[in-house]
Image 1 (cartoon, rainbow, N blue to C red):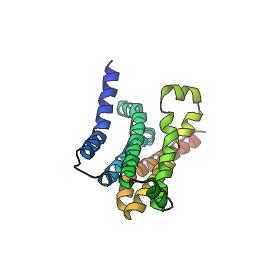
Image 2 (image 1 turned 180 degrees about the horizontal axis):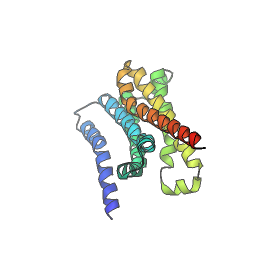
Image 3 (image 1 turned 90 degrees about the horizontal axis):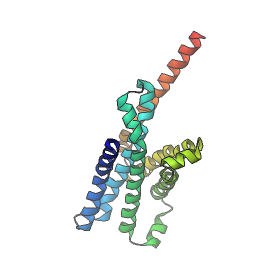
Image 4 (image 1 turned 180 degrees about the vertical axis):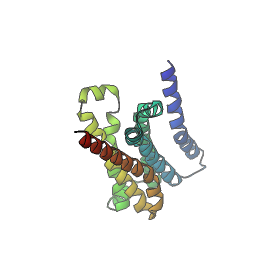
Length: 196
């Protein structure tokens, strides 16, 4: 019961920014184009937060904090997909024409967004326990699509904003976590070799 309450509270917290965006749009406080950046940025941030606990827990060791974080990372990943879907909705509303969307499809800043979104669909579609049990080892292979989705999503951001600094600042914590994991693995391998 306590766990269910915790998950419900987490989902409410994850949904609040999106609900605020939709409310603002419905009240004509903002245009759909004004919500493209915050919805896309929220999706990227949630993807990064979902990816961080794995490498960090491997380097620092599995404690209670990391166990909780690992337990909610699927929720964070699904929420990242939800915000990507919201980002797409705002794009459709902003363009207001399928023909206009098709005309833009050849632009690198646009097709990278579509590709990143497409890569997010399979991991989001199998982010539940039954799929995990049914797919077995293959489940992790599908989930790894989030890595190219993130990199291409960051490329989409850079190509549209023509500013690489914000995207790289967002990537920095995850890049640092990957470096720490690599250092930790190298250290363990050296220790094992010296003990052999």
